[in-house]
Structure formats: C-alpha cells, structure tokens
Image (cartoon, rainbow, N blue to C red; front, side, top):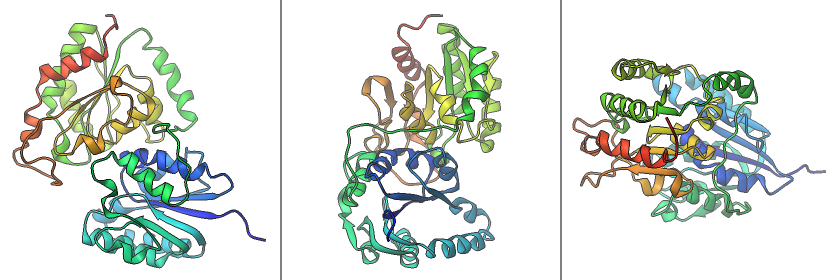
Length: 349
C-alpha cells in the first residue's frame, strides 16, 4: 500500500528568497495528506526547521562551497541520500537567471528520482523537466506571486494570505523578558547589511538617521546583522553618539523573526531581514539600490512600509560590486527620516 505523495521543494537561495517563497510553500502544504521535504541553502534550512509544512529539511551548502571546495563531499553524500527516495514531485521554485544556473540545476534534477519534475522553463532548464512553467513567469510581478504560480502548476492550493514566518519556540523564552526591560520605548531596528556590497547604504548615513530618531522620538536603537557585519555595526554605533543596543551577530536565524516582530520599525537595506520583517507585519523603511522593488519590495500592506529608491539609468543591475553606487548615493538622510516619521506617526517620546 502506497503512503501519501512525496514532494521535494528545491529552493537553493537566500533567507529572503525562502521567506518570499512561503506563500508558495503553503500552497503545496495545504494539499493535505502529502509529505513535503525541502532542499534549501544552509541559512534558509536553519529557519525552515521551524515551519510546520516540512517532514524533512535538507541543507545544501552552496555558499560554503564557494569558499571551500571540501564541501563537495558533503554535497555528494547529500545527493546519495536524496537519490534513495523516489519522489512523486520535485519542483524548483526559484527563477533561472543564466545558462550556467540552468545547467547546474538541471544536473541536480537529473540526479534525483521523481515522477514529475517542475520548474522555470528558461535557459534550457526545461530539458530536465516534465512540467514547464513558461519563461516569463517572473517578469513584471513580485517574486512571491511568481513562485506561487509554480506551486499552483504543481497542484498547490491558492489562497490570498501573504507571506508567513515562524520562529523557534525557544525564542520567546530567550527574548521576552529582554523586551519587557525596554517596555515603553520606541524600538528602532537598523539592519545595515545585505547579501551584496552594492546593496548596502552608507553607515554614516544610518548613524545620522539614528541620531535624528533619538532626537525626535527618544528612540532606542537596536543594531542587527550577521557575524560578518559586526565591524559595520560597531562603526555605526560609534557614529550615533548615544547608548545603542548592538545585537549584530548575536541572534540565531531561527530566532530573528521573533526579535523583528517586537520592533516598532525596521530601517533596512534590500535584504533577508527585510522580508522576514514584512512577514511579521513590522513597519519597514526599505532602501533599494540596484534591485527592482517591483519584484522584491516588502510583501505587505502598502501603509506598513516605505521604499526609497531612485531612477538611476543603470538600475536594475545584477552586479555584486560597484565603484560608484549612484543608486545608493541618491538616497539622503532627510528623506529616510521623513519616511520613518510617517510610519511612527502617533508614537510619543
């Protein structure tokens, strides 16, 4: 007797992409008696373990591999393990952006066993699929909506709810008392990092915004980010000239959603924490450099966020670095402050 259908969702991307895919993942999970597994980047996998939809979560160390080729052995062991399962469906939710990306994902799909293989038919990836989602699925729409369309092609159930995020239940025990100690204060999170260097607004301008919010609202500034951004956060803290809380590198990814949910506002670059905060419903001021907000904006009610971006001729672009990031230079402290004040309207010092 056969058990419930077995589905493997492939989403080897960042934490922001994983959160944007939560609507699509819910569409698959809502089918009922299906066994859903996830193959994701290590960062996304650490968060995904708190989600209720997955029977198994597998971490694919893609970023680790770029830094150290010894992870090839870990990937080989993972692929051998996955090949032992005959899936009913394997689907890649993420977009295919290049010939090399299509080939790499195609090889992965060729190695895995499944009755149906579903994904984005672009740059030749369709050769590895049994069900193809047309090449233009991601054009002119938000990533969350495009990924849900792939899930619907695979038999998922549509709903009108937005993104969702879950945190490790231990988060509440760890952070609740800490936040009670800040009761009555306006809590402003600042996330100065980002996946690419050319997505990061300037640290001296973040510090200036923080000083302005302290002056106007008596705000308590909380600096956020990963371990690699500790120096950046320390520089900003030094430039604020007031007592700040520096949590950079101190919050595990599976606890970050809870921390962000307790903020009054988050000021952030286009980044994973931006999408987590959007799923939480936390008000956001988002600073966009090279990426297109049409595809990557906070996926939440428009009155809950403000986007600052400038129509520079060279954007959007896919560069990782830029010697002269005009798109970020054109975003000024005064307009970020004004956006914060709009969202904090009604808050008192």
